[in-house]
Length: 307
Length: 187
Image: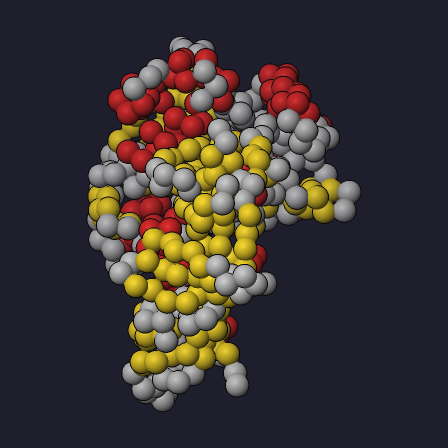
């Protein structure tokens, strides 16, 4: 009886989530995107310094569908999207589940600025389908969705909110701490914010800017202080990507984190991939915003602890 | 020794030889960045509070405190009296030291009193306690599993939200760490 009561209490939030997911699909299908499904279980996740995969036999559960989706781009698919489960070991908190739902979409022949337009359109459309009008309210904060949303560089954000420069933060090895404690709480409070131009060394799978090689063409989307999405103008230089993977693998060894084999087939495909832009958006987090829920636990029927 | 991933609300750790208790805990992780553990800590000696952010590589010493099983006797003018049933010694804790545990102090309940260098500093409750509901609105049948809640008062005077099917006189289990309803206890 207690379990039925607990699950029944989530009915309205789960309804909002379902409407949201349906409107996301419709948004992309109407624009001619192909919905694709790639395997959850893969032999080699992208090595990243701070993302741990869950082992599944000799292979791993995906931490993101990125590698397989880019192989589709390389094969000539121009516009693809996917809604799927991703798994990241050890991530559990008010905004984190070790198994969560990701939306990823990719476009060839463009850069990350087009993805900003997509975000503006997508979230406004989903909010509209839910009857929320031109704004969302999350935990007492009202955020207007009318485009254009604010664009701010990481450099500007640190100067404005952190009281020290990006270089100082990187030099002292406290970039992540400053980001979480000083910068993020200010981002997207009145309008959603695209935090863009990350220091090149934090670019992961993003290409560096042609005019300013100090920064990577990467952005993160924030609404009401909550990080929702990470986007890149995709790196298409396979040799450079291999160097970054090798550096991430070295970082992982130094931290005594499990090593992953390099995703060789992805690296081979990358040399054929056209200029592209891609983005990963946390579906659970978007549901938190649209259903005005404080924790990720509230927007899923079952948490790992309840199984 | 603890690592940052062991941190949780209620954990007691030692920093600069003083015992601290974690009063709030959040796991955070900026995009592509490293896992961070944001904590509010309270110095158990002087009550000072502050915020700290730890990384997963950080390690902590457990605060070396003596725990003594004692029985709760009574409360008078903001002082809470506990007795050692072995030697009948009594100690007093302030409302601040008892903290949220005062919501769950059943008569004669056995708790752990924490001592640091012979000074009583705090109280450690069982994680779960069973209490009798002393005040509740009647259950409107038909509203069986709608997911709604209703407020009730339990025998310690504590008020909380419970499912509508809980009735006056029933026993329920509460998680003393969160203060939330867990389940109905039969019998």
